Image (cartoon, rainbow, N blue to C red; front, side, top):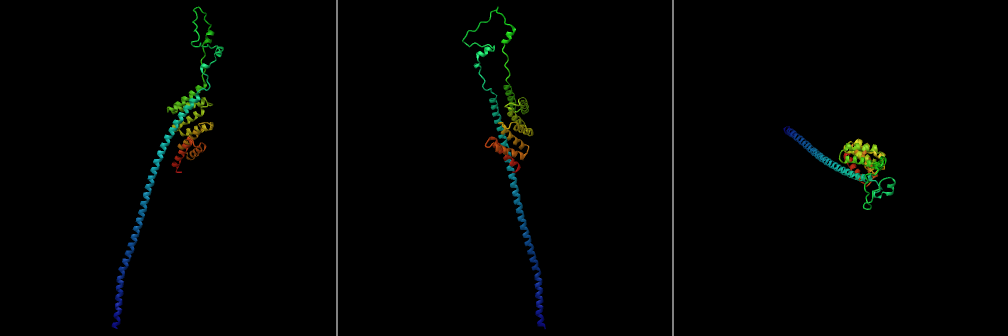
Length: 293
């Protein structure tokens, strides 16, 4: 009986020992599992930090690109302003030359070609040719004095005012005020010119420079209306391409993006390969930069 009980006791003791040893092993395994989970969380956090850092770097790069684009936009705007000013100066100079040419009377006969017979029949005195005849002596003291009526008839009448010259002078004065930078006076003179000479061949030019005087003073709404009026009244004028371009410019300054794009595209389509078309293309690029499309 004792021999049989001894093995049973050993088995119980072994089982107790195994149970006692198993608790720390389970705890060790649990600790290892927790350590693995902590390590995994740390790795996830590290990856998240890397992603955040990458996003921050990308954001900084985008901000730098935006600053670079803003600098390019400002540079383009400055270049555009310089180009507009050069173009305006060229327009002013060209218009001044054309105005001087248009103001010259064509076919005027020189003074030497006056018919002496007609002068005599009109009662005007005919000057003696120089060196070809003896100058008549003064009348004697007892010579009869001509009647007052005849004396008055001998006085030449004042030359009549040339309407074309007066018209050209009025235009030149308005244009000179524009060149001098006195835009308010220029606008006043051009308005007066158009009111006084509505049928003048210079009326489209006066209308254009009136709109320009408003544009350079940043009165874009009135300038827009002036250029649109020019296109309505003188669609076939040589100033029509420039006026259409300035309509687009005014719409751009007023931030009427859709209307400005439509107008400037019409300039490119209607006047291809011209200065106004190239200027319109430049302003279209500026619109794309402003609107992002």
